[in-house]
Image 1 (cartoon, one colour):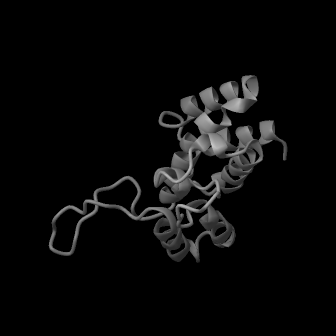
Image 2 (tube, helix red, strand yellow):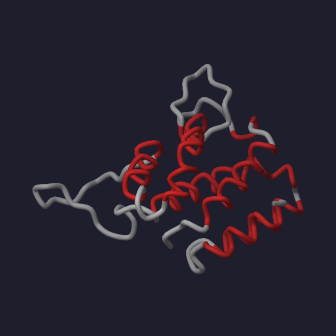
Length: 152
């Protein structure tokens, strides 16, 4: 799969109103300005997490604690991937096989890390300009690989 095919695969399965227009902007900007990957990567990470969430019971509805009060927080990162694995073992076993390799995008980061994962930026350990183009494109290919399992 080349980059254009990866973008097409994402388009085929993304939510038309919520995400498609943004993916179109990302595609145009990246192809016109390949050095823009550091600006575009946080969006791709947000999308990846939302796409995984769309395969779980936490997507598109209010969540409540056992006492009936609204939950303030949803599962994120590795806990979200673990939920997706647990809830999709039977229905989407091919999807579940891919998810463990996606955990690397959400691994815990430390100040000495130089990894270009979501948490290294979210925790202020690394500025996205230190990511590289190869990592961005790998993220796009991984999103494309997971796209057909999205629950949008």
